[in-house]
Amino acid sequence: DVVMTQTPLSLPISLGDQASFSCRSSQSLLHSNGNTYLAWYLQKSGLSPQILIYRISNRFSGVPDRFSGSGSGTDFTLKISRVEPEDLGVYYCLQHTHLPYTFGAGTKLELK
Amino acid sequence: QVQLKETGPGLVQPTQTLSITCTVSGFSLTSYYMQWVRQTPGKGLEWMGFIRSGGSTEYNSEFKSRLSISRDTSKNQVFLKMNSLKTEDTGVYYCARWNNPFDYWGQGVMVTVSS
Image (cartoon, rainbow over all chains, first blue to last red):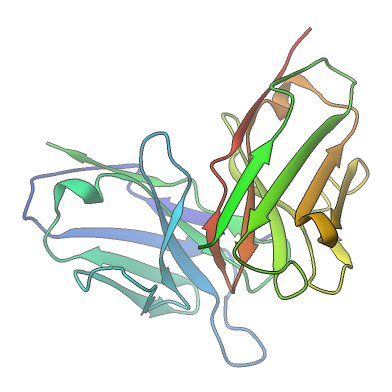
């Protein structure tokens, strides 16, 4: 199975700061069809995960443009340009290039 | 408006069978894969398996021997059945619509495995 490693475990931040999340996979997520199936989700306290980014860098409908994704192969990054209160929660990366699909353990974005 | 809602028992005894129903609205089960994901204290978010729009299934080998996913398209329902439950199966079980990747999730149902 592909292991997804997220760092850091916790990210204390001040509102308005930039936040950066890392996700590394144990093998390349480049599919034979040329796509790389890496997505990012945010889970707010007590709620289901909500999608932010799919295929590395595509923002899902309604996701603010302060969220951006980048990376390739095995190394991926999610950035928030200016953190707002509604951005707090746990961020997960998901790979769906290889079965079984696997999630990272998450990075908790919290206030300093 | 796309909606998904899981209903299930809440408490299940060890060795027993878990049955959860996911009722959907706002889209057709014959147009989308439907997936099951669980979140446990021990392993976090885990993909369990899916049922394709055509009705065939795929399972995580972690659960393959004890997991079954099925559906009733006339009732807009997807079902999860997992047998031989253990205490480490305690967690929140979600159904989610697959639109490469998961786009809509249910609220989840908390399942506690305990005697």
